[in-house]
Structures are given as C-alpha cells and as structure tokens.
Length: 362
Image 1 (tube, one colour):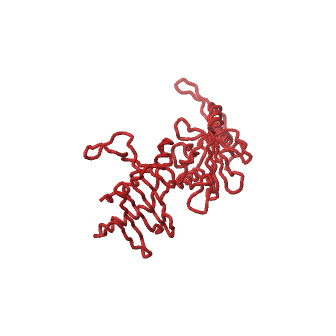
Image 2 (cartoon, one colour; image 1 turned 135 degrees about the vertical axis):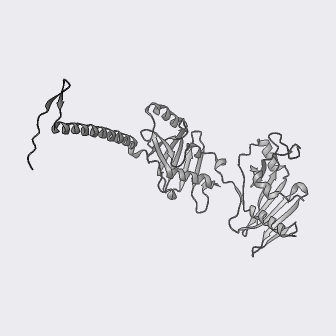
Image 3 (cartoon, helix red, strand yellow; image 1 turned 30 degrees about the vertical axis):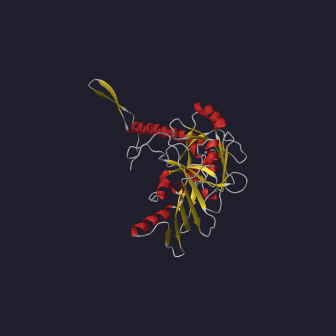
C-alpha cells in the first residue's frame, strides 16, 4: 500500500464562477467539526441532567420520603397546628390502637402504609414559590412521625397543601434530630393521581374503627332482634354446635324461610356505623342517651360470651321532605338513623340496617 499524501485544494471554474474543489483532507475536517459539535451538545445535556440530579440529592438525601419496609412500622404520630393529635400503634391483632383507647380504622391505616411505601418526589419546588411554601408549611403543616421500633422516628414528614393542579403535595423531611431539610419538595404517590394531605387527619372520631358487630368465621352464635316500636316482639337466631340454625319467633315452613333467615343471620357478622360525629346538640344527644325509646334493639353473642353486644336504633327526622312510592310524605329520614352503641350516640346508614330488619314487621 502506498503512502497517502493530502493535496491542496484546487481551483475550478464553472460558468465563470470561481470555486474551490474540496480534497479528502477538507472532507475529514468537515466531519471532525460535525462530531465536535454533537459531542458538545451531548456534554451539555449530561451537565443539565447532573445538575438536576444534584438538586434532588441535596440536604443529606432530603428526597428520600419513602419507607421501604412498612411491615416494620409500629407507630405513627400525626399532629396539626391546632393541637389535635392521633397516635396509631400496631398491636398483635388485626387492628391498630388509636390514642391508647380505641381501635383505628384498618382501611385508613393501610392507606397510610401504602403512602409511606410509594411516596416519591415529583419535582423540586420552583424558586419563585419557595418562600410561600415554606410559610405554609411552618404555619399550617402537619407533622407525621414514622417509627420502626425505639423512641426515635425513622422518618419525619411535614405535610403542607396541594399544588394548584392537585397532583402533588408540598412536603419537607426532618432528620432524626428534628432538623428540617434545606427545602421542601413536591411529592406524589406512584400509581395515584391526586394529593396526599387529606390522608393525614387528626380527628379521633374519623380515625375510630366503625365496626359494631364483627364476628369472623363461625364465631357468631346468637342474634336477637327486638321490635320495640311494635310491642317488643323478639326474633332470635342461634347456631348450635353442629352449625344448624334455629329461629325463635318465626316458623320455618319452607326452604325459602330457611334461606331467608340464614341470609339474615350472616348479615349480622359484619355491621358498621357510618360516623361517630352525630351532629346532635348536647341537649338532643342527652335526650337520645337517657330518655328516648328505641325503635329497634339488636343483640349479638359471639363465641362463649355471656354478655350481649347491643345496638339501639332510633328514627331520624328528615333533612328535607321526601315521598314514598305512593306519593305520601316520609316521616323519617330515608338514608340515616341514629344509634346508641356502648353508650355513644352515632350515625348509621339505613343501607346497612334495612336488610337486617326488612320482612320482620309481620
């Protein structure tokens, strides 16, 4: 192979116009400049990406909101700026303890654990919004301490309001000593579109477990339904040791009767109230608890329990006029009733209780 020696460009003349005819050396230079330009662009893109990554990793990994092992979370403490607090503690049973007294709603606790696991930074707070977001977090932010054993929280979140498009929530982390990270971030939950702040409420009435009758498996043994508004007639259902259902107060004359009462008995295994916030005045609540006569009284016995678990039901005046299928004015609210359960006045839904009572007034 011979040695290649680049030659100088040669002049050419086309239709009286002078031009330069490129040699192989000039073609190589043009390729070199093109590659240099592409490399510079790529370097710029990498620099911008690295700057954004650095922005997200400042303040000792201040974006690490997620809790990888939620099974190890044994205590959650939520406090707001109005002095309200909710302390949730894991127990050996199905339900967490609330403020050391009540059981907590399982669905609400599970939602918190899912949020801890899947929380991710959506983006940094824009510089122009930082001052306002910091003021909101300081003035109205909720504090959430997440414990995984011991007296020191594994993570502490401060939760603010939602973004304007309601797809993210302003949050900031604190370290083990309580020192806040340098700046907040906009946080969301993977697989969910919306904001997260409403999950961290502090009202004890909202957190309380709503189960009134809760009998897993075959633990429900006996039910009594007292129709106090119609002379106190009582229907009773009881299952013997062989699993055979016996009904008192109504004959089982056909297979349809048997199926009716079996369905009724099974419905009593899980009965929930709607809310502990009954919206009654103190005088009205006192009257309900101490002087009013219930319309129905439901009692349940589970396992070997000797004392009954009891619910008293009271009709509720309607909020507005409604009419039945015949056009007659309904005397009572068609959606809700009052109930007294363990000496507390609560609200229940007729959607839950009507199937327990229908067909009995005969």
